[in-house]
Amino acid sequence: MNQNRSVWSTPWLWFSIAAIVMIGLAVSFWPRTTPLSDDGYDLTMALYNACNRRNEDAIGQLQDQVETKASAGQLSTDATSALRSVIDDAKAGRWQPAMVRCRELMDDQIKH
Image (cartoon, rainbow, N blue to C red; front, side, top):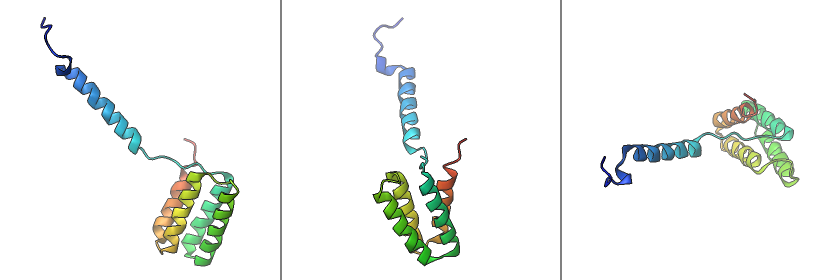
């Protein structure tokens, strides 16, 4: 048996390192869910409906509600950020992406 062989030259070591790197990348890029409180879910449904109707007035009112609830600590930071993103899309006239994001937020709440 060759005792002079370097540990770094074994194929299994390189395979193991590559596997660890791949797992790390997969975990870091894996889609994350945004948990919503009951208030957050209700706001998401209302935003979806407002986007579906392309109702700019309702979007403005919902933006006020999001900010009020966020200030009162009734929405998590992630939920607030997600809802603000939906509102930004809607205010920019990107109704379809806003509706898709609302749908994703609501789907995230389903326990599989």
